[in-house]
Length: 327
Image (cartoon, rainbow, N blue to C red; front, top):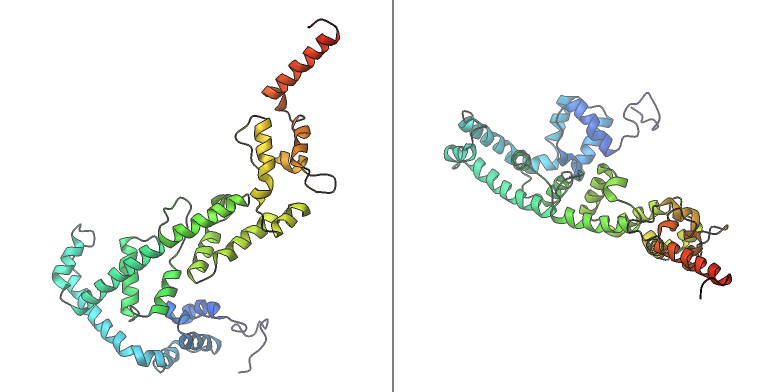
């Protein structure tokens, strides 16, 4: 069959990438393990299978001829047998039993499957904790089995990719490990650029960043994305200063301090509309900080400050003196 272009509606597989192949393969062949996205041979095998519309039977047959299967198939089949024995031993133990773990150990603790799974679970717990990935005991059980059943408990590249997919961020969650460290750095930087990380960005945005950092992307690359977003709507004078390495907070901070001091406030921020309307001249250039004093005396809150009252008092005293009514 000749391959047609990406937009050819007559060929449903045209233009597929590896990620799209995974979804298509699930539709065609059922469960597809994530090993197909971490092993180069299996990635290509899966892509070709979807592109050529292999039948489920042909897919299974050809899979057994791959180098990956020839190297791991016997071990995986043996573990499948061991797991069936293990499942038979523990089938009558109630999972809701508070002593379930100990009872399983008592009846199956001498089996190769239990020992291998237990070792995998301990190692995985340490890795999850180190990366700051939130998990439940149920997660740990199922993820450990997924690794061990397919003989991936020592497959470092696979485990790295596997763990990466488990990194997630949810507002209100309690981050730990590397996730917490990276979030702290980005949260602080976001504030300096005028953002509240968990308000101005979605959980999906932050999860994506955490996964990218885990894969080796730099924190500076993420900061650059925050910086680019911060430039949106800013006058050219501010953008030019940001190009020199200043953050939005660096630029606005002197004006905010003047604003709070003169108006006797403690909660003024660079997000207040007053700044965009008063600290730029007609050409969009920032005015000298001292010139904001003039604008601030036109602020609706100025009349309630000590400075305003003192100014009125001094003016009244001058008038009285001018009329010779005050010594």
